Length: 314
Image 1 (cartoon, rainbow, N blue to C red):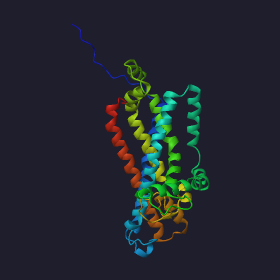
Image 2 (tube, one colour; image 1 turned 120 degrees about the vertical axis):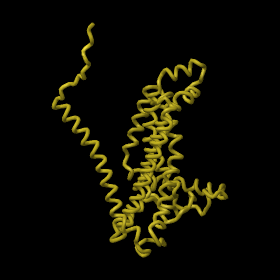
Image 3 (cartoon, rainbow, N blue to C red; image 1 turned 180 degrees about the vertical axis):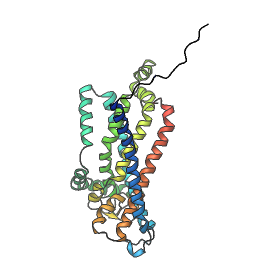
Image 4 (cartoon, rainbow, N blue to C red; image 1 turned 45 degrees about the vertical axis):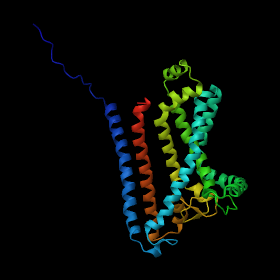
């Protein structure tokens, strides 16, 4: 009776190129963690004096840091939410058209234009918003207030320049539109062809096939793309600083001249003149923006992980 020789693990002799590549990946992975930790430590260390600052150190009527940062947090979230509400449906429509409706040549051209739109600097969008969009939409805002002024969102008095939080949200929506569209387009193109053909074979129309096969498969990708767009909208500075007439208020009104500003725009506008504790106060608002962005990404990751098992994307 013979017995099989004991199995031994086959190991390849590492080559110098393997060791160099492995070390480079470890360094790259560690570097991002070190950078993130360094930014967090800097923000926390520089923000500590702001939490104990006197009321005279704050601009406006704020008595402490939380009263100062409250309207800024509201303006940041409100502008970003409005931008996403407008951008997501349009981005999904463009992505579905490119991936499932448009002829190949037209789809390639549209995809190129969408990618090109993402590379336009934000200052260009700001110039367009303040010189073209705001004057163009002001008569529409006036009509909207006359017809629907009884609704709190459209309450008057309407801004005479069109530089309102709604105009900022429109510009932000245009800015995040290519990001969401490009990612959703790539996700939709990854839908298994068998899923689409099975739906069509069962008698589904094109729209029903998209509803039953494409959208469920791409749901995690849609959420991830939306969160990336939200991150861009939360941190946008130039557009808000150029277009908006800011004020330290909390108001849901979309068409008035007094509008809540954002954290990023407030830092950009006030940092050149800040000194002493004023610098620490602005850095502390940056810490709050850092925490908001981190929380948004963590929530997005949690949602994607929950939805992934139902979509078949894993």
